[in-house]
Length: 393
Image 1 (cartoon, rainbow, N blue to C red):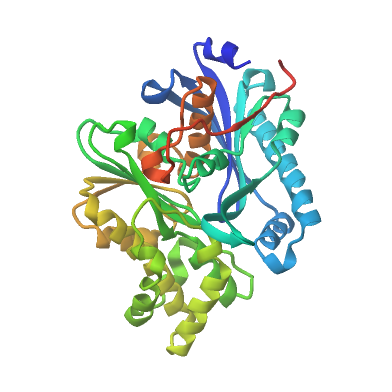
Image 2: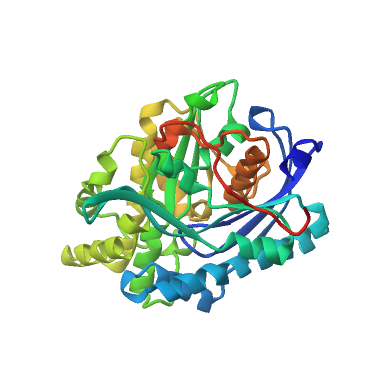
């Protein structure tokens, strides 16, 4: 199968992504010619499936250790596999293609646990990560060979299993003229540093800290679950940033770690947000002040992470792009740096991460390593992704 795909002039791949915010599934249908630095990428179609309230609540139940058990986790693995498969099928319909036109599906899955730092387990220490959305269900329901579970091989090779998007950033955005930063603001924010005319070994990337996640959780708290995010930063605009609370938040040890580093809901999830909210109230802050300060935390940790690398141009994508207050704060903290979005390069902001996993899957076809050890901390370059044959062998 892979030998056949290697021999094709181009491959049509669907990338599937459900991010840390768990708002839905993005499907990017991509045509790729060549591979690695010689890749020629064409985004054919992007489709977003918004999780209905019931599904979103079930996914958030997975994030609560007290409400999760093994039967529920197992069931959700298969249910999300069904949803990912249906999303791929709907994306194909919208694009005007047929399932026979698709060579591969590349599914990141839904991260439900990510622990890149050693945890004590009896007399042992281990690191782990878990993404669900069963790939076998996707392959069976669509009939299309599916590549999934990308993170675990990097972690097995001593890396953090994250961030994985830098390989695609290198393919898509490396400039011969100047140093670029590629910033994704999802639930967690991550930055890829691309020196001028970079080789893959020159690339550096890491998670800067919270993106939308803490803001979203605070908004849920103040609205009693009626709102899931601060649309366009409208709540934060009504408040005033508390420098005292921000200083306390910035003392979190994650922000002083040197790359490579990665993080997730385990550190900056609901517990962190609730503690932030309570601390804000103890300081006499209004709800709007607390949302403004949570937004400033994201902007400040992003800016602090970027300043040291001499970036001349910053390309921003992910859901955070739609929070204009957050983007204004970032611009104010990074004067002199030209700010662009993925859409300036013809890539819808929400499409980028799904597109990235299509690029990673294309490297699997060629038996080519697709992690970036300088970003993840892995001991060596490895091929990420498990291959599950579809019905067309």
